[in-house]
Image 1: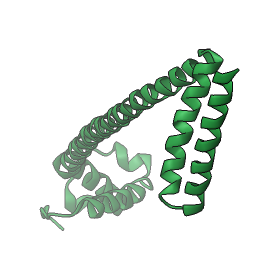
Image 2: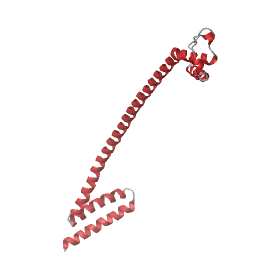
Image 3: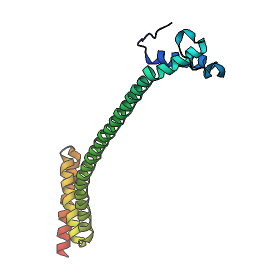
Length: 177
């Protein structure tokens, strides 16, 4: 133990060694500390630990701690950039979804409003027509409906023909009066 031997250690080895030697150095008496002699051959074990920690703090540990702090800072910065980019991408995707849903909703709404408006106008026309005109419109649509049903049912066709005859008979009676 008369010379310093430089070795390369990992971070955890250096920290564990430093803490172990600092603990041993804390057992040094004040009388020994007052002695200015730091020759390796004349030092007690406790004073050697003090010398070792002093030398290694400036030679190896501070550089390692600084490099680790710099790496940690870079990783935190990279993580912050990643988080910012993720928030931006997610916000864009959500905005596109909202826009797409809004477009589809407005298209459907416009179609339904036109359909609803058409139905409303038809109902209002039917309600505001004079009674004779309303009956004529009703008969017209009833006849169309029966024609559609009669294509499927022969009995319906017979009923339709009978009602036409009845209608013609009533019409002649009304004209004669």
